[in-house]
Length: 180
Image (cartoon, rainbow, N blue to C red; front, side):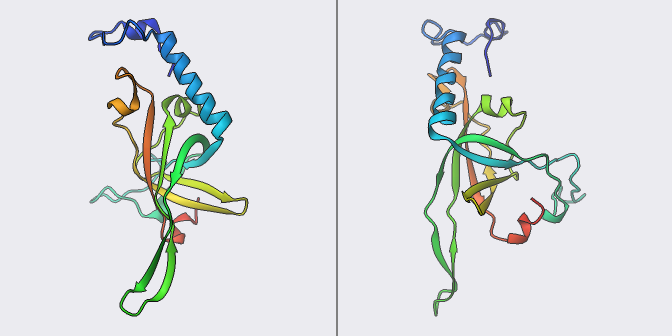
């Protein structure tokens, strides 16, 4: 997401904060943030991007059965994630029988430049893998892909949107992850 001087000269220029934020300054600050996430935090997730062109969808509802999903090549991306506390659930709350533990929701922030460099994008319905131990990966489905990222929290001083906040829900049916 490197900004050039020509990108700044647009039909409707954004003139706010130009005194302190040249394209070089923006690129430098994004590089510092990416270095922190990639080298210091070193948190990654695996993106299983649904190939929307090859996946068979219903003519009526424009939805796909999980068995018909076709995925692009998985990509490991650097993120800053937070996994909510797991919850103890029961199938019958009256007699408290059939306990199970449900993994909490996954939230992560990812730089737009990280997605650009890896040649991928995150969309609602894509799958995310979180390697919990060397032998176990938890799977999540993207519920909010964070595309609307031009609010003050996701921009550099209200000018350039540079990262996205993604919300994922846990995959509860293990058969949904059979073809990942």
